[in-house]
Length: 403
Image (cartoon, rainbow, N blue to C red; front, side, top):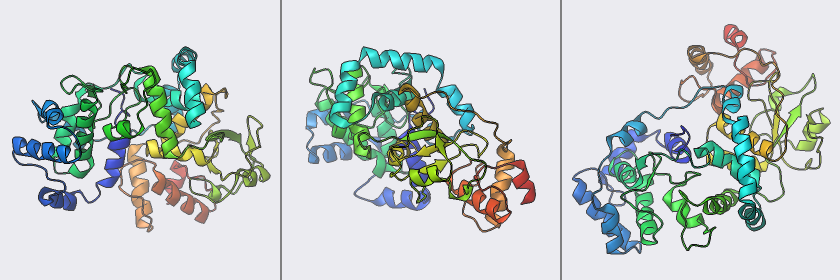
């Protein structure tokens, strides 16, 4: 299974569980989110809640009959890993020529569905297709965990039942509509289903019957996948007719301390400083834009626009989101990015040392995990600026030695 198929749940829950011990103690006694204990009693409570939410007793019985705790799901949940590849490593592996070729073929094959997606929801075909490729290789690798058992397991477990129990209730409603079969429907370990890996509540809320058969079946129907994904992306805030990311080249001198997510500059401000779009399109100068440098000023450079926010909603990983956004531009006609010659980065052990040193300097970098996340990048920029270095947020051996 693609390591990102549990992306929204796994990563969002990773951040949401900072107070896991306290939350688990509260959840175990909370009538709103009961968990643990005898499985049959637990399932009886789920059935009662599903009926109260409008599902039939028959549907609840059908979904919950034979439900089991899956130890493999708990193992995956406890051992959530975060990849530590650089942008160049990850993007070159995921945005392959084979995937680009298949993606373009899919866009031709399902041209009508893509046209409807753009007309109804304002989402370009490249954006949808890139997620389709990144999540499951166009449906080839959707996950082999029984969805019913995965959600029962994570709802019964007392780490975060309040996040998974509603998904289990939603699965019952999906079964009632004939969109899943609880005995055979499979997906990611965290309960996502289908070719773009969506959770049951999102499928109910944003599902679109793209092929006209009266059902939303994201495991089998490409038109359903395309239209549902477009509707969900629109819900995340995608603005029709606006860009999401644009590759740029940089001048020799630039206030790199202004780069990074969350700045206050417009694209026009960056253009005035000498930042140049490779596609020469400067028509979006009035839009807010952040300059991102995944591997520092010597590597690829991009302006991200407000629509980039949907990528950060989809997945919290900076490398994943930047790669997915770049993938979408390639499918929309952009050339391969300029690799540049990035400075040597740090290995896992060195990054942990750097994070420890930054903590000692008073910075909040989060967990010392060897990952160049947003908190670490911000801290690096501030230290680079203090040391008189270009503040591009890239961790190098030189910076480590100076700290």
